[in-house]
Amino acid sequence: MTIPEIKLPLETPNLIIDEFKTSDYNRLCEIAKNINLKADADNSKGYMPFYHFQVDKDTPKRDTVITQKASAFLIRSERERNEEPRAVYRLAMRLKDEGTLIGNVTINMLPEIGENGKLIFGDRGCCLDPDYGGRGYATEAVTAVSHEYFKYYDKMDITAHPNNAHSRKLITRTGGEEIGFRAASAYGDEPRVLYEIRCDKFYNSEAPKFIPPEPLKKALEKAKRVEKKYSYIIKLARE
Image (cartoon, rainbow, N blue to C red):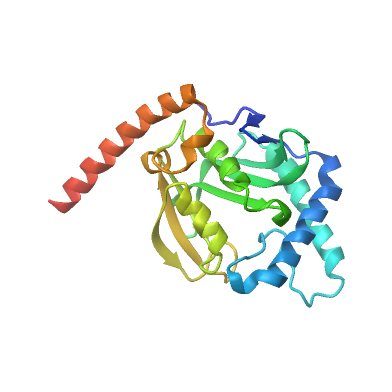
């Protein structure tokens, strides 16, 4: 049996996606603080902080708590990297020209059992320093890991907080379709909107513009097969 994996680093037009390093700690703390400050200012506009870094505004010694969360995040990424077989790829997002760390993109390359006993595939996530928002970097990063993921699978499961307009837009921009709602989740009492991204929908979204022509050609051939399969399943269900 082939174990799904991602061969790193990944390169996109503007980014290098690779493993986190211990030396990323100070910069990751900056990103975590920036994310919380952005949420303080723009929460009503549909911006929500990355849940791993989220710290309430009135928390005593808030900056200290945020840095502790950044440290725990790096430790977690290291632990996941050393698991065999490796399931979670919690990766650093860096600018190609400067090497500056600007965020994180995560994907689970092995299915896990959800709260309802069903297998969950993919569970992609992303966070970006808000100072680098609005330039397409998040779309570029999730496209890169999704392309690797769809070499092995036909569909991906993903969730977002109903008030997180930025996250939901990113999901739909890369082929996601809303399929349900959950009042509570693995994130505690936090509600989640449930999405599914099929391989064929992904490759018919905005995402492929970040994929080189030759790999894209091969991926589109698979996407056509997946589209045909799901069309047949839907037809049978309607008969």
